[in-house]
Length: 130
Image (cartoon, rainbow, N blue to C red; front, side):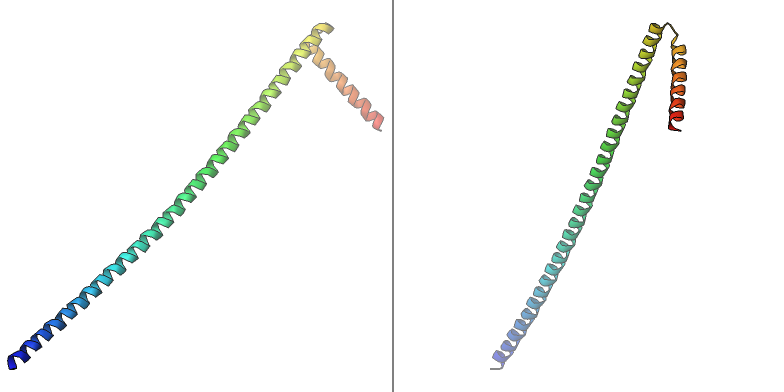
């Protein structure tokens, strides 16, 4: 009877020890799960921040490219305007030479003559305004 009681106590003690070990195992497992979940959330947040930074870099890159295109278009427009001005000046010069040949004067004389006529015309206009 005594032996059975002692054996029962030992088995009961072993059972509670096993229970405590199971509880500790469950607690360790839950702690590992919590740590893994926290790590997963941290990694997700960092990945989201990196995606946002990448979007911002892409947007900045696009803004820069658009600005460069606008500058290139402006340069091209200015170059075309300058080419037009040079072309008009050349045509004007040709016309002056042609007129000079036709009038028997040198180009220099013709330009001086035109300048004089323009001044006289402007003075006449001022006179008529008064």
